[in-house]
Length: 103
Image (cartoon, rainbow, N blue to C red; front, side):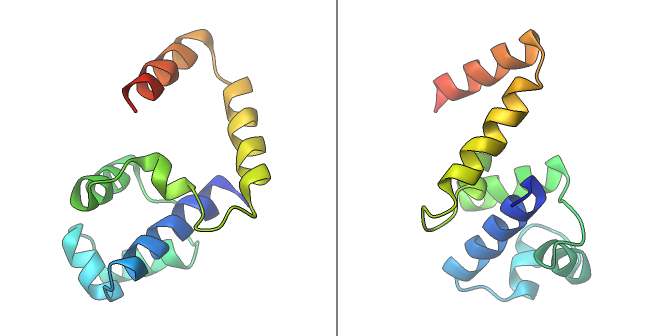
């Protein structure tokens, strides 16, 4: 599963858990309904600003959007995170470490 699919599925799952329609969810994050539908249908990855709005509105972290409800995809997620970490420079790794320490 790609990063885009993980994020988009996490956003859809969050909407469903909160028992919101696509229209209600889009309104909460100040986004067009069509734009939101494009996210749910994996047509595009939401911007960092959109992810921030979602996290603030629902009091979650971006990491929570990446984690599936069930753990069957855990190995795929670990591989994806490992791949991304291996492609980071030292400065980015230090920033990631500092963020993890905050969790």
